[in-house]
Length: 350
Image 1 (cartoon, rainbow, N blue to C red):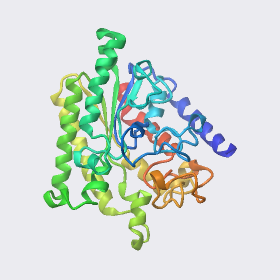
Image 2 (tube, helix red, strand yellow):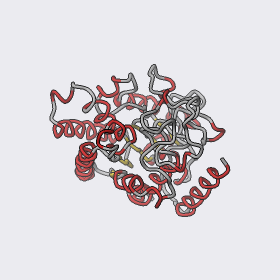
Image 3 (cartoon, helix red, strand yellow):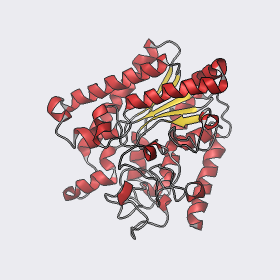
Image 4 (cartoon, helix red, strand yellow):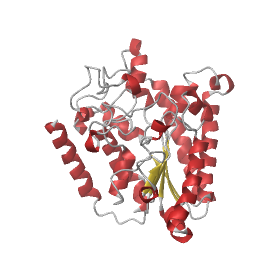
């Protein structure tokens, strides 16, 4: 435990040392998406996809499992701290927080969701359209809390982070014979791109001006997908990685188009594919011991309730692993992703 804390403090100290000079006009961090950025909203939804129990959160403040799918903090928490706002971005449905907290940042994200409404329905989580409805409710409450003028200023100066899409492919298109009967993979990518376009426009029409749209990770290299590809020697599933790169290219083009179409918008594409791919392929270069197997349980297929405190195989030092569970990065990886985002795409808001 002492070694883990020392490694974490060293990395975080280096991170802040590089970012401490940020003087950005970013009032708050507002988050939409899936389990990569869910801070605990699924705790308050009738779904089996939860992580509000140990060992999740064992390296979070007070060793508290918050519903983040991680051993500690997630990338949006680190981004918020780097912008000098606060060290966490709380979940909108968490009753431990109120509008005083949400004025500085809030996450509407829900683990298991996607652009496609069908994706959210699979595990009964919050669909993207509902995340937007919660945001509208939040706007009303913020205006009641701060007054119209101040609330409008906060909303226009906020940084909006959007991170989802992986579940649409891995839990929906490639897992169920529903969308794949109707769409080719290229058509489904276009279907999702259109939803992303409309979502960004909806945010813009609601006053958002600073928006970051995350691409997909190398989803064929997630431990769960490697395990399902067992007979190929647990190699990355190249089909899934190819689809991720194709879809990311569509998102890049979408960002360029919308920056031309929507007056006053600052929309950036945030690439996570190549930094994560580099970390997974070269774990020791980033201070990890293992880039294939996760820390929790056997590290091959467990997540959510299968990743629990009773499993004797869970590692002792999570930040020696690129992945915390079979689907989600460790806190240290989230720190690296946040640092990369700040240096590359989010630098536009500094």
